[in-house]
Amino acid sequence: MAITSALKATVVDIESGQPRTSNEPEVLINADALWRDYEKNPYAADAGYLHRAFAVEFRPFQIVRLANGLPAFIYRAWGHIRIRAFAAGSEIDKIAVLARGIDSAVIVRGTCDGLVDGVVHLSGCTIVDPACVIDAA
Image (cartoon, rainbow, N blue to C red; front, side):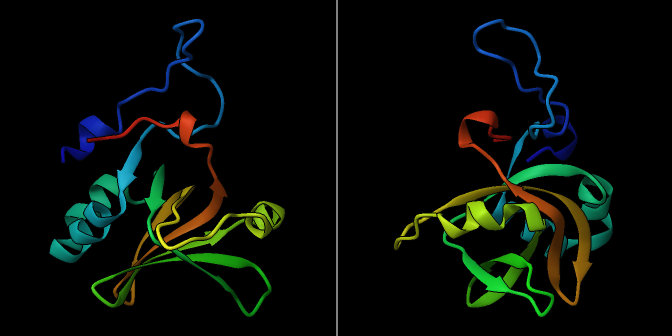
């Protein structure tokens, strides 16, 4: 995956053909690629992801309540927590009605805070409508 080219993609409105001007994410980053890039070389991954906002699809995912009462999404791979996405307080109502099943997925947009104790952290996460993102692959 070419990180630099993926971050240059733009979301285009289907009806007008013009680039979107909203705060919707530009690209959908693969969750496995994200944590593997950090596992391989955290410094190189920081160059491509750190302090950038993008969308990530978690399939499957877990929702946990933090000590401060705010929710976080947890993405696990190979039995380990790989990504923690800290949700904004404004997302609690949306999270309460999420459909959860065996193969449930959620797309969240957040800002990458880098690798903390072996786990990729995303902050200020909001739930995204899947129709508003472009797959980076």
